[in-house]
Image (spheres, helix red, strand yellow):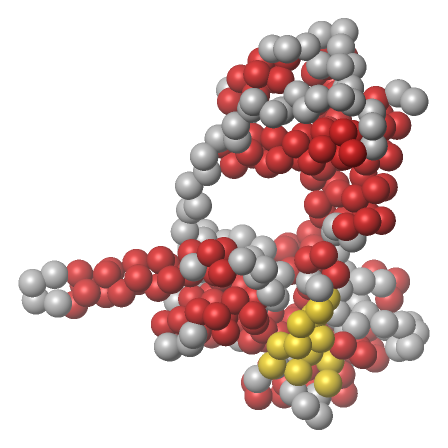
Amino acid sequence: MNDHDRRDAFLDALWLERGVSEHTLSAYRRDLTAWIVYLEAQDERLLAPGETTLADFVESCRERYHTRSIARQLSCLRRFYRWALAEGLMSHDPLAEVHSPRVRPGLPSTLEEHDVDRLLMAPDVETALGLRDRAMLEVLYACGLRVSELVGLTVSAVNLRQGVVLIRGKGDKERLVPLGEEAMAWVERYLRQGRNELMNDIRQPPLFPGRRDGFMTRQTFWHRLKHYAQLAAIDKPLSPHTLRHAFATHLLNHGANLRVVQLLLGHSDLSTTQIYTHVAQARLEALHAQHHPRG
């Protein structure tokens, strides 16, 4: 079995045993392939790297990548070598003495409430496509979903009678999230007036279909989001998760409990959610400086 086969065996095991997402698998495949290519250039193998090879690899990465990317690569390699040890393919962990670089979490980019309003109103709801996109944006902001969760929604996941949507998140964990009246009204209108027009076979499961009645890709939604941000004249930094960040920040600004926000976002660790308290605090400080006479 060559190194690429071992990489694939590890990724298969991750998928089968841990249920990791396609997005994570793709990232791990890229990171392991980069490591294999580097090893091949040194005439070394995946299960027998030289004593200083890993340190040299990390040093070469520092010249090209951000600290966060290097930390992710090391996390991937650490996971691979733990798997190799458990499978009896190695007798020691080459990363045992290697420490991941400390990553300081940056504040996520978000939007003010009036910016969100302009963004949500950007699609042309007189068209089936615009109606679909308006419903998508409303659900994304109302529920704080990850983009992968949004584009993966099925018709059966939405319960309009109870006003909730069943989300399948990271690691196939499920959570129920309230839709809210506004998002519910737009989804209802879209299902009544738009979805059938966009599909050849309305029995197919995607709630928000892309090409050929299939699920929309994350990249397609990201292009749609950027398009509507331009129409709404929003010139602030955007990311595919901007509305998710806005959801969390606006909830906290209006007094929501941090634990509730954690549950709605599907975070397994409360510390991940706490970053949004810093965003809310930064906004309060900016408002104080702007409006207080002694600011």
